[in-house]
Image (cartoon, rainbow, N blue to C red; front, side, top):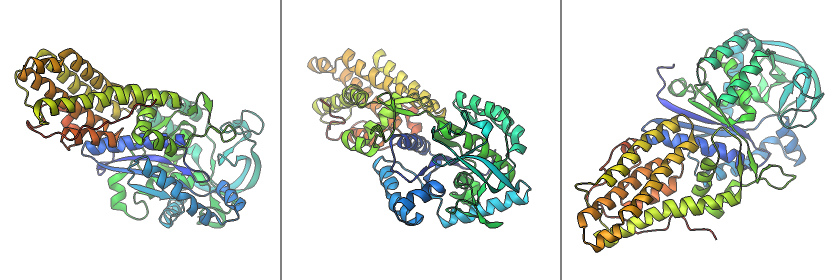
Length: 507
């Protein structure tokens, strides 16, 4: 473990820019944003990285089809990503582009370092290349004669001079790294990667002479560096490798690399081997989440079912989309996006359960205590039960987020919300008001205020705008996770805000 490190470092993969973000890339970035926000409210220093992968033949061909040079083509597309992440409330700390000069210089430095370590040699590459996936295969790796087993498209036979990285040299070290701890998650991904490595690794072709759009190999300008070798290095170049060693040491290694399951192999095999070659610490965790289908079907342009997350968020709200994606799908498994299921969760869980709970509580405080949160004294067994459940679930929620069990964390938060709604119905504060049992009524409304306060902090990583709205109506402003483990944090007499509907029901 790097003792100098003092930052929680979370990353997304770099996205290809030949199209705008879809619901799948939004899912990854929302997941990373939840982790970043959670660690910030724990008081930790966080570095959250995202960005774009801008080299390779795929980009070159897409630009050529538009009659533009690659950089001009890319510059026009980047705002699709930065604007989408802004609209989806993605709180990244840095957005890296692999065409950034700082990145390119650092990639060359890294290449030279592992070349000097004896792990790069010149040879000849012959095999199959998939342009859409920018992946090379030997004949033995392909399930059928010439079709990519990721996208199913026909590969091209390539034969040319290439620099190779001695990936096979690190086979045993990689097995030890992955078996020693929960580095690759979930368990299914870990088993897949171990099986892949144990079949035997071959050295990796890391340069091309047939492709011109990329970073030139420092030893030979006729070659450009393989796009994956270049792109993976963003995780260290963005935090100062090659430009700011003090910052780099304070942030690396990554705590969590998040990505879709289809690229785990690059992150759990090639990437750590590159780092081992350079004598650098390895990432603590590589997490590959599942794929999203739409109404049970695979997303594709030809089917016309590619979901634009910005359009969904504009129709139903950003927080509703963020909530749905994290609540609906066990994190790490495949899942399905359905507008019908989204609407159902908005109506039943966001509008009825959460929204109604807040509204009823604030309206009663306004009605019975002139909008000032009352003091609780001589609390009852019922009051204590909700308090104990809330504090217990808050602690467990923190543990689950740390374990990347995001859907289970939300389920625990909803246990608090559902228990609070039941508590209102069981304690009947309106009847206590009629009977003028002011002390019991005060206890009920204070207990509800506290359960809502704790819930708002727990919800903040998932639904930041909603959490802030809840606190505004409670008349408070504090997003510290440590305060979810304490009770009696709201001061007596705190003036509540105006009651507002959190989520409108959708007809």
